[in-house]
Structure formats: structure tokens, C-alpha cells
Length: 180
Image 1 (cartoon, one colour):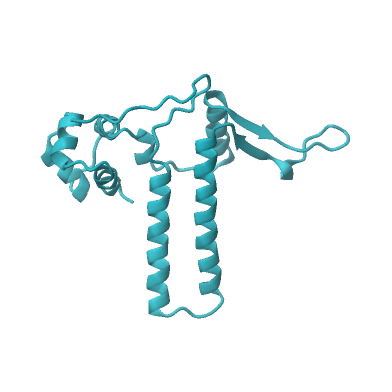
Image 2 (cartoon, rainbow, N blue to C red):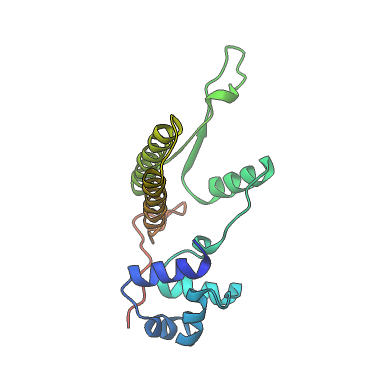
């Protein structure tokens, strides 16, 4: 999804008009329309205003390029600092950790529930891909696969649509979505 498509998706999910989002964010509704149509791209400060008005994290709009060990570790270390996350691994008899046994888990039930839904969705896509890779794929099957991929993307977007705070030291805090 493009940034504009994400803005439209979450705006519609909230049942907001472009005018309402404009009022809540302090950005003219015509500019919101241009963002959604891809005519203009919002600057970071506009994205922050929009994400605050929609009650979602600005991270939803960021397409992080995660391609190195450093990229992954810096994200994991930040998460470990900020949230109740557990990184564990089995040990050999000599006390050394076994790299292939590394596990990451979370102490938050809602986060774990959403991760399980993600795993179910991912498994559904993998099953469909295996089915289609086993033989030649016709146009109807290709369209079905594209529709499934779109549906799965929508499911992933809905899974990240949560304003439950999970920072260490907090419990049950929810950020309210602004209403007019």
C-alpha cells in the first residue's frame, strides 16, 4: 500500500470523511485528498499529525528497509528496551547458547493474539502459493492468488490497528482516538 492508500484505509476504518481528518489533523481536506490520490506525498510532520488524528502509530506509514543484521538487531534491542519482550535460547551442556533455538516472546496477551492471527494468515498464503507452484497457473487462479494477497495485506493492516500501549511499566492503557 502507498502512503496515500494507508491514509484512506485508516480514515475509512475510522468512519471519517476527508474533511473530518483535515480538521483533526490541522491539514486542509484538499491536501488530505491529494495525499490519498498520490498527487502529493506528506512530509514527516504532516504524517505525524495524520497518524495522531487517526489514533495510530506513525510507524504504520514508514516503509523501513530492513536488510542487514544491524537493522534487525537495532529494532530488537529497541523493542527489548521499551516493551516486555523475552529473548531466550536453549543452552548446550557447556553453557553456550544454541543459535538455532533462539525464541522471542511477549508478555502482552493482545499482542500475542494478533501475532497468532498473523501466523494463521501467513500459513494460508503459503498453502495457496504451494498449491499454485505445484503446476501451471491459469488466469483465474492467478486472479484468485492476487485477491488472496490483497486480503492478507488488509488483514495485516487491521492487525496493526491497535492503540493499546504496551510500554514497560504500563498496563491496560489505551490511547483514545480523537472524535469531533
